[in-house]
Image (tube, rainbow, N blue to C red; front, side):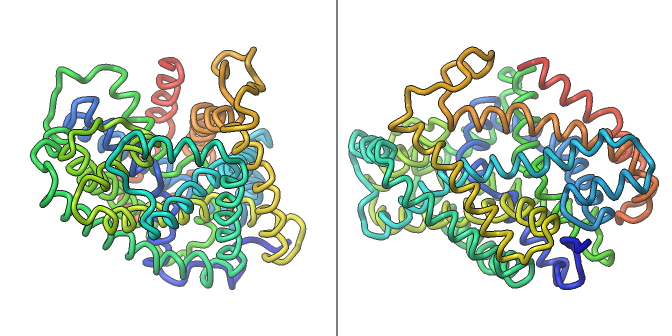
Length: 453
């Protein structure tokens, strides 16, 4: 069987691997969720707890996924199947492979809809149509976009088509080449926006909002939120890292790479907060989290400041870059599996995977307009009142991702360790700590998060 990690399908260098993997991890959640959570949950106290969660939960699972991919040598399904055969363990663990295809398939279907929003706003910001000094106008513009199925469909289609065009070109010629271009551009634009915001905006209030430690605001819920953010920010449990791990040559240290990726991901989240909140506070606006911050509050801030049209255009192009690299990483596990399983060319596999996800995404975008009153699982606890888009998001982000991460930790920690011991670029102490973190700490942490919810 041809595998996804055949000789012509691997990262050309450690830098290419790190840029591609960082691109998959750095997404919209870094820009609109992390900073708000920090500001509302103890500022610097939350940041410290988050960093601890990155070390204790995020990095160990990411390392586990990459190790599974490199040891298995193929798509998520192939890799888990191969490792089951090598270890002689129960075939029930194959559920990890199945989830690592299903999760990214559903994930890219609805993520592409949101990615389409970034396409729409990037284009219109270049035309000077986004920035508005009136929050009512900015809000109405966002509502108008959501109410138009055709407008959402066009944007969703353009986003998915772009993702497919990159993946057709392969690992080095597509994913890695684009990451080498977009990730440095993203960092430069973000650094420029951050400097501009700190100089022209209310830097003092933004720094206080993000970093002043307020330990009195820290509760059990704060720890749960920090752990959840660490889990999702690094794109673990999706299947991306297993697939990307299959493309990593044995000469590259996985341990060092994971440390760099986690550090860059966290720095980007902090930089985003320092690029956004000084501008928001300078205009006396509400730093609400989520899409409203990005698509309503910020356009209002841009409209009220000198040079806001140009700054807004740069910001929404940056937002598109972040969404696009994550979209590429999310569809890749599905493409790798289809191409591998059917023995077809990468082009055909990409067209099939992308077209199927695009079709499912149409149902998600219709939940904002024509099907807004349709709640498919209204009788199921946790899904009450949720439309198709919110149902997909809740099922993936709140149920399947933690569950898959839980299984990956146990499978790697208790079953696969003999195959990867001494091959991760870790010293004896760190390797032992990693193993027992996977075996005990992470499963307990995920169970506590599930029980809290």
